[in-house]
Length: 261
Image (cartoon, one colour):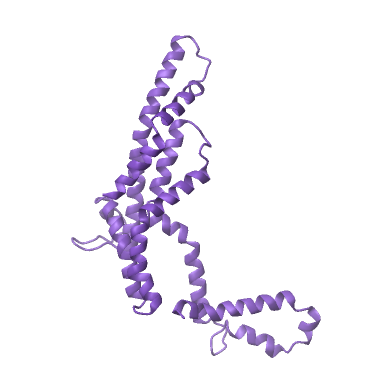
């Protein structure tokens, strides 16, 4: 049995037994129960000397639950998910439609593209770090180093060179020449770089739709239809433009090619 399952087995069983006791035991039976029997259930959550401190296994369980709650944020910091979401949001905003496609569909598309792009990184991290650790061939420190190395390589290839020194100097922890930045510093610099790149692409996406809006506004003013909102008239033209140009596929192809290099 892996070490993680061994650590989780005792606290998990204790929590289940305590829940069943609180739910199914009647008040009458609880009054007749031996106090020593009831206190034995709580002994699993205390240290061996019974002084009221939490045992190490329970602390490990709390840490694991906390890490699982942070998984979405960690996934956004070390993958291309924020970049995809921002670009697709810019494209929808440039077209002028507010809920087509809806946020859930944009998130699903970004997630699937993220899995498609990050699949080699995920597989290498699993093969080099997680799988050997579950087999017991390496310890925790070696597993962390081996599992994060593929993500380091991916983030280093995408991060702006000037971002890391700026962040390091901001916290008075400069990175020396030739030294590798910490994982927290590298992931933060990577996320800021991805946001910057996404806004650059969003600016390029907005330009053709801005031209359509300007042309429609000029035509409406020329014919004296100043009371008609230009966005209402330009929306069908922008939708037709994105359909005829197959814009969603072209932009998705450009995004994937940017990560293929």
